[in-house]
Length: 136
Figure 1 (cartoon, rainbow, N blue to C red):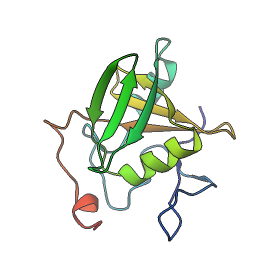
Figure 2 (cartoon, rainbow, N blue to C red; figure 1 turned 60 degrees about the vertical axis):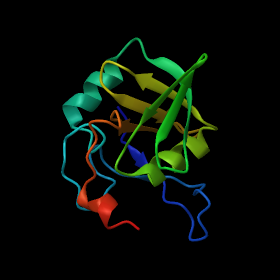
Figure 3 (cartoon, rainbow, N blue to C red; figure 1 turned 135 degrees about the vertical axis):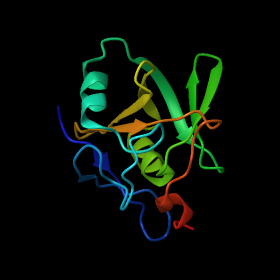
């Protein structure tokens, strides 16, 4: 399985065109939470990688930093502690993603062949980490 990727937006706010590779479970300085919407544990990532039934979706990050997943006519909303990284990855994939519903993972594949796994959480159960509180 290839490593997770994390794209950092340019200083002017536009998503980055290049992708920096980091190991699974990193990408957010200081966050060590293996909870929904935070760091993806390597075992969880492996199980999601082996999932034979991902749901192909379109996704974007809205102005409230919620991840909006659309499948057919249904819309689902989720949270992640690093919405900027999710938005940058989705920018590179033109919004195409695979939802691993059993594992709560959104997989975003880059045109260069890498893929990012984002742990997504229902907004009603999601708690921010210190990274998000100090981000703004």
